[in-house]
Amino acid sequence: DFVYSNKTIQHIPYPASKNYIKDFIRILKPRGSALFLVHNCKHFEEESLRFKWAKWRRETLRPFFKKLRGKPPVQIHPISKQHVESYVNQAGGEVIRWETDSSYTKRKKGNLRTWYWTRKSSTS
Image 1: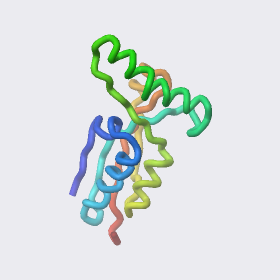
Image 2: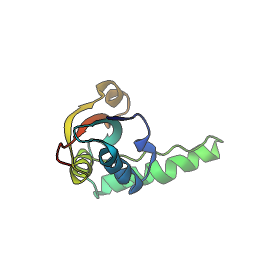
Image 3: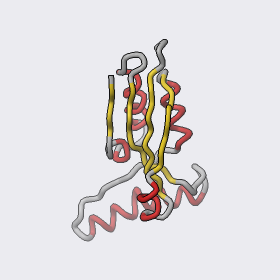
């Protein structure tokens, strides 16, 4: 059993993104695997002023200016590594491996694009 998601979860706002990750694990057979990509921010503590500023800029300011220039707004919703691991564990799975795309990180000034390889436990 296998679930694969590339460049999807990043466009889904919370709490729907949390539910998608949990559903990846839920629908797997025991010992089934899921591989998915998540964006997260390396340098900000959630709920810090810097995090709130980046979130406002990303979710409000950037879409406004794109719309002003006649471009469709695209929103990216990052999820922290700790939250991804928590969602997977809550759903009865485990993160086997995670790997950050370092070439993307260099181009995007600290934004991380991370692949998560997960597995549903054999007892679920």
